[in-house]
Image (cartoon, rainbow, N blue to C red; front, side, top):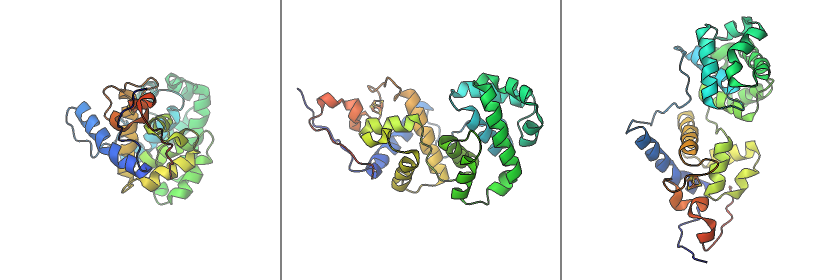
Length: 258
Ligand code: SF4
């Protein structure tokens, strides 16, 4: 068997994060034709003009994006916007049947109607963004997870993008990327544990930076690290266990996350 002198493995998750961040940034910047991505907000909330409505629109998108792709969410949000009901008070005033029809493009629309109503009710009763932004992150997370239909990923989408708290959003793309980069524990790691691992090893983990991290990973997953990965042009291939190819590597490290 042919082996190559591969620079793997990473010494640690911190080493991995430090190495891949500038490469993902550079690749994304080139993809955008040189546009500055330092302030990349990424979460595509497009209708609201003030901070309260924008935060709520993000929370609505976080519920609607469960088990579907963003294009379908965009159609549902466009319907809500066209019907002039993209606020908490307006959604609460809508009959379930009417709301279901508006969000039908996002799929599972009857389930999502109940979930969206539950999230909206909780948001409204809590006092909206003005009240929520004064609560500690851990308390907000518990509050979100207690809402019908809000799981870890949805809660962290809302925490990070709507409430601007420094949390890692763990999704399929994140697990896939770090697993392929050489961290086999990633696949089975519990959500909270993996989120803590990544947060602990992220340099200067501000909400802005973590929002950018999540956006970069999602964009990378779409461009290269798909279910069937396009490794040939991948900016991370040089140190990716999966991309280089296990069969060509003389040593097979088992990397620990901690
Ligand atoms: S080299 Fe392939 S498997 Fe590795 S990160 Fe890039 S696309 Fe994913």
